[in-house]
Image (cartoon, rainbow, N blue to C red; front, side, top):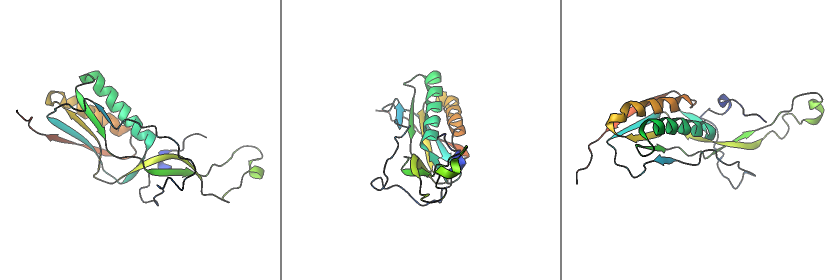
Length: 172
């Protein structure tokens, strides 16, 4: 079946469905890397992508945001010029009661009988003001970091803002 629109699942105030031992089959996550770039690098600026609303973010939206930010930063600063970290983990399992369409579907389908649904994906619950993604970068590449987070925010189902945090490098 095709993927339903994100508005079907982005409501934050739903009952948690996270116990994987009660779920028959959990589909795999599309997002596999939560830290990338130069993870041991020493950078003087940190940018945070912060959610403005409480929302559920599906795993494929997190992956799309990660790919957009990572690709932009890799092209502009090189693969060792930044550190990218994704904070929320998709624990919430999403269900769908598949509906049939077409000729004769009414004779085959059960309608709303046994409508609990089957697991189709996972989502991360994010509160308003919570960090979604961080980029550690040098001060000279600040513009590229902001643009990467802006592009990543376009892939997410909530309005986002970018917070800038600067600190001095430790001198040994």
